[in-house]
Length: 419
Image (tube, helix red, strand yellow):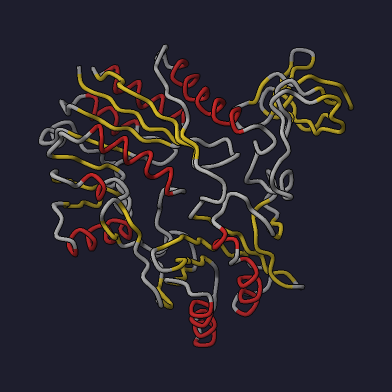
């Protein structure tokens, strides 16, 4: 069924939202104010999906996308909207989520946005077929893969790996197999982790080692499935990264903030908030993205579930003789209790997208003076912040950080203090 609509706003998933006979219609790649003809599609929640068949008149915020893959690639949803719109929309998402949990009139600052070609970490999907290997991203809302040839989000060095990967992977991947290639910019070249069902015989290892040398990688590791410990095949360069004033070990495939600009915005806010703290606990610490920039005059306890990340953090701390201790602990199942938090006067936590409700409840019952909350999900962020304010904390600031250009995702950092 084909109908004419006017797009009202952009929803949380990045699709335009219009209304037809009292029902929401989700229109990908549309802009507020667009007048469009659409073909109605499948139900989604309480609404319907739709595909644009004709743009009758554009909205004021529409602009030309900068990538030829836009509309095919599933990575970008908002590239057809202006930079100002993207920044304001992401800020408003945080305000709306806080408002829904009763935190009204919170002063959310203007969004700090990373520039194009600044993404330093990416996961490519590779698929071996009869005619070779496709390397790129998923199609929008699909498990199908397309061969990427451009990406204005990535640092150029990462994009330049695509063709070498297409030539090398057919030699080691079984027919009809899928591989995930995580590539991260390290101090001396790119660090790569390949997750795939690779025959790890001598021939495959020689091919991988030659690939690492030819492409001046810092390190190349493999594993058969997610969750397994990676095996380093070749390490011709230095796979460390700079965190604050410290050169830190990077675990193969380990989490890192997506852009250097985004990392600096988050760590600068945390450093300023915790500058007077002398005993800091860093929860969901990863490899030390916050621990090392914060160390200064403070002593730090870093806690994370991932053994590889904690091991890398511990090695860096010991090598640099830093006052950082670490603990491996599942903070979802065993959050640090309020009494365990008693020795600390500063705390920072940066959980996965699901947030950290159980841990936030314990923080709320503590007497820690300053808490810094980092998140990549406005919904779980608002829930966790509400738990802290119910426990007597006041919000000093909230800063949106956009290091996921043209996607619906946004990072945020809040500073809270105990009343």
